[in-house]
Image (cartoon, rainbow, N blue to C red; front, side, top):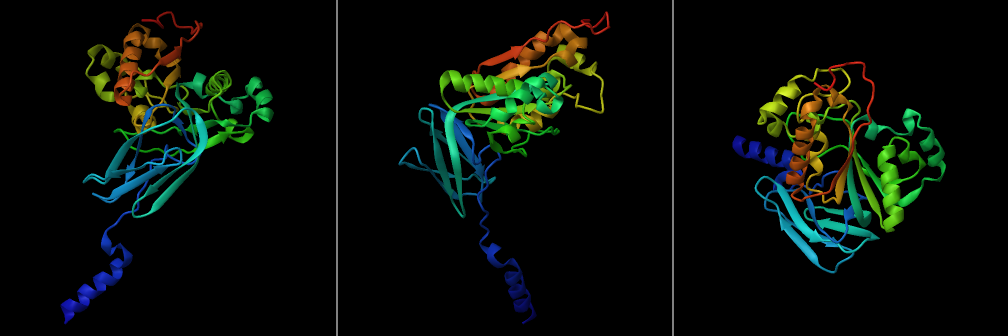
Length: 307
């Protein structure tokens, strides 16, 4: 009798969770207001119960696609996107239903680097102060990843897609915005900008730790970069938290503005950037275009700066 009462009590406590079904969940980069890369094969992915079948429907297609979660509760599906357009909806149905609204198809770019890329109107840029009042443009979307580090590659981040307007532009990268604005005007397609930047950071923190450690020259150079209270310095720390979560998200390419924090190890910067670019292309599984600005010469007051 006592055993029966105990079992009954367990069932009552478990309640609706007795079936063991978990709600499907999407990463932050798959959300309302996002831009998907046009005329491409893009990944849609997330988490659910193991072996659960997820049905995916897009409003630009009459096809219902499906994916089955693996034993570690992850699922992924590759779908084709049309030419630029929208807004569209994407519906995910499993144990629960998620509907993504206001989705556009266009060009998506990753914008990364140090303060040159990070700076916004909040840093007192007069050009941005003049731009803000007339900046509203629903065909430009922002995904701003906060400054975060991790010891190992992460599968999600704390960010969200927003439309460009005077409020959302205030804290967004000025360089990324003007790049996206020109693209949107020249190509006349929606543009999605992923801002993942951190002032002061050396390029090593944006490069997977493993590839730096395997290269004696890069490893020795990384060891020369001293710790600060303002930004990470160890290889891979920003990459793990601010790049790895989006490498499954299809992009057109990347723009990069960085270099000052590597001035003291200038002799290895070419090899470091080659390694960084190769690593990103490998993890995106695509030979994405990668454009970067070379920092202009500056009198740093250190005669051995290029040593």
